Each structure stands twice: as C-alpha cells, then as structure tokens.
Length: 330
Image (cartoon, rainbow, N blue to C red; front, side, top):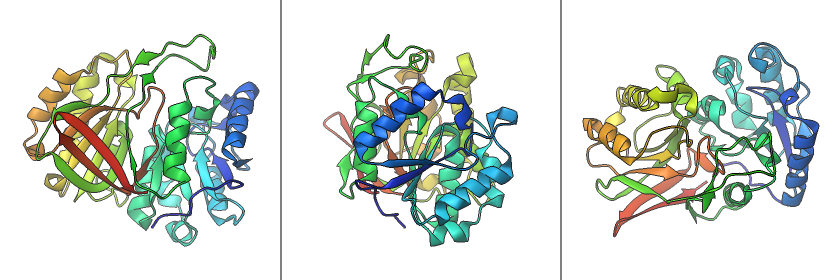
C-alpha cells in the first residue's frame, strides 16, 4: 500500500515520536520552513511537538495521540518526524494500526524512527520512508542531494536510480552553518558480487534500532528483502564489533537465508569501518553467500542523505565492476 504522493500545496505535519521540537532553535526552524516553502509544502506542527521529559521526549500518550491525530486529519498529506533520538519503539504497542491503514499517508524520518517505519509497514503493509527529518532541512549548505531524493521518492511515482552524492560531510553544521567541511565521495563500494542481480522489498535503516524489533510482531519479513543498514558513531572504537553482532542477530531470524541483497550506508568519518573490515564480516556469514553486498550508500548519520521506501521494491545489480541500485516501487 503506497500513500498519495506530495504535490505543490500539500501539507505536512511535524510530529515528535523521538526527541522533541524544543531542541530546534528558532533560526533553524526558519531555515527549515523556508526550505519547505521552496518545495511547495505547507508545514504544521503537532499539538505536543515541544512537550519534553526524559530523553527529551514527551510522554508515550501524547506522542501516540499526535501520530493518531496526524493520520486522522484529512488536511494532512504526510508526516515528518522532528528529529531522531531514543524510544520510538515505546510507542509500538499503543498505535492504532487499523486507523493508520484506513488513512494511509507518507511517514518519513530516520535513525530512531526506524522502529516506527518498519513496524507500521509490518503491521499494515503501508510503505513508509527512511529520509530526512524536519530538522534536516535546517541545513543551509550541502543539502541539495537530500532535497533532490526527497522529491524523487515523495513527489513522483517513477522508478529512479539511487546514486551516491558527489560530496559528503559529518561536521556539526547546526553549530556553524557557514564553516563546512565537504569531502569528495568515492561512490559505491562492492563488498561481495554474489549473483550480481537481486530484487526485493527494502527494509531496515538504523541497525541498532532495527534489531529492537526482533522477536516482536513489528518485525518485517526477511523473505525476499533487500536490507538497507547503517549505524551512528555511538559505539565508538567497537563499531565494527557491534555491526558484526547486530548483523548476526538479523541472520538468526526466520527466513534470513532468503535475504536478496544488503546495502550499507556511509559511516561517519570518526568510524574506522572501511571496505576490508566490512568484507571480512560479510565473508564470515554463510547465510549471505551468493548475494550482492554494497557499501558507501548515501544514507545514515553523515550528510546528505537519500530518501528510500521501507517496503518499496528495489533492484541491486553489479555489472562490469560497477554497482547500481534502482528504486522500482515507492
């Protein structure tokens, strides 16, 4: 089930299922609102978007209420999350999935929102989206790629090639919008060619959040899936160890041997997780023999990021030493 796409004049509702709007400065909000105006989108905010508490989140009750209100409101065309954070998975057992299924709308966010987007897809069949938060649009420079793929995925129905960005950054842009550090992108890295071609439904996102769904009714099926996986710098110098553990946890789930491909997002600069380490980890997983594995995709906690559909169809192919990803249904 795919919700109606955005168009000029569509209205988005900003909700805070993870951290709340109070941490976004007035200056950043203006930059974000201006960016949405250029996209032709009207911005509204949930009633409790700024309510704060432990982990800089509002209560479970108000977060669930805001999401339900956004899905019910006929004037709202789609929902963007404020920012990432923690504890979106606390909401899952309280959501009214019948209500969501009856009122299908775009839902977009990443990081901790991975729990929400994958759970809603698993419970309703509604395609959701891993992509920019509201806060992401407060970036003044180097955000063109994010806006481009936001439009390709959420404004248009046509299939599109998912290419890497020309440049990337992981500087603290929200502290200094003018002094930015952009790095030339090296493009996709082929970790394992496998059978070179695969098609399937995309699931995943932020790896350490995705595994919170294991053993629950909110975990999407792995059969005929293409895993998109990334993680942030929280694990520091044991990032590779944690990636290995978390990936193995996925491979111990039902139908893991029917995963069709894996696409790994670009890690932040501080993380030592280069091709040789990824290749070694993948080579130790017998469940992944014969499938294509690609790294250095433009999603995750470095900037910019693409938008891709959770539950949407994609193909991954490797030909003449080059990797290609095509989003087929979104």
